[in-house]
Length: 407
Image (cartoon, rainbow, N blue to C red):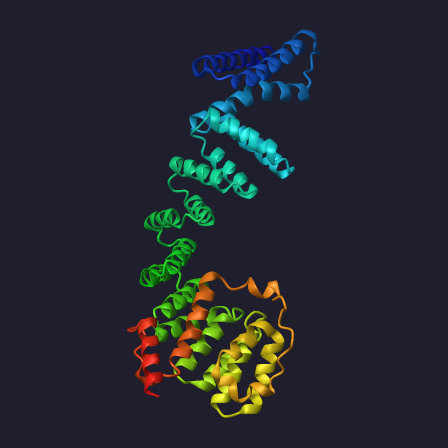
């Protein structure tokens, strides 16, 4: 027992001196609580030795060893592994605060941490996540940037930072970050999709195609990549390749009906009316697309000479979205022969259901509008003569106008 007590005192005192040395050397008051805990453990041991009985109390033994030896040894091991105990403790406490819903408390701890230890990777990253959740995008971007400087392989922070920059309408910066990310990790599918979206918005469709094609090497069964590639090809008027991509996307996810709508429009362009009808009927399952799909079915029925079906489909389309569909019908001479038989409401000042306007993304709406315009343009041009993918929308519009003048 005496030997055990002697060994304890030597080790505990040695660790206490070492921690005191670290406090002086680092000029870090963070060691003060640790020294106080060690001193408490040593004091408990001293009281036990002086006033204790012959048989030591196991519970007290455990407490003294934890306070005076195990805790300081754990700190030393962490420091040898280049992991600061105080950083670990701060991160732990911040996470506890977050679990308890005390975001302000967590933020205060992390701000103190990164102020004292600017190289704290987890401190900056966790602080960035808090700012992001609070809506402080600019501060979140700054913190993610600092985290990336410390850990250049933190690819998720690259991606999150690019998304925040997009939200801040700094798409050029976001594009550069995503390009750098893909240079380091070309199989990061989400980054490829985000970069492709920016390129489509900039109307740089060929580069978007390159980005998506490169990503498909690593994830050929990605619905989003195949679908996005179809959109990029659509904007290039390369409808053959667009069709292949939409068909692949439709196989991978049967519940995204815009793929069916796009395939239907492409079929109309090539005068494959039976195929177009099939896809438009599937698209009517989608709440947002059903009005347009029924209107397109009405047009197909008119092309087939089936006025009764055309009236039926057009009326359903009007019922689904009166204001939008009536405006389209009034601007399209195709419906002149049946417009008198359509159930057009007197009051068209009806607010469109918000739920029907929030599903399609910006790039999807761009492609949908482009396809509808191309269908209209090719009505006056020989379908088999159009060299899609080689002519721009402007050139095709000029051909349409020339054809109208000749007629």
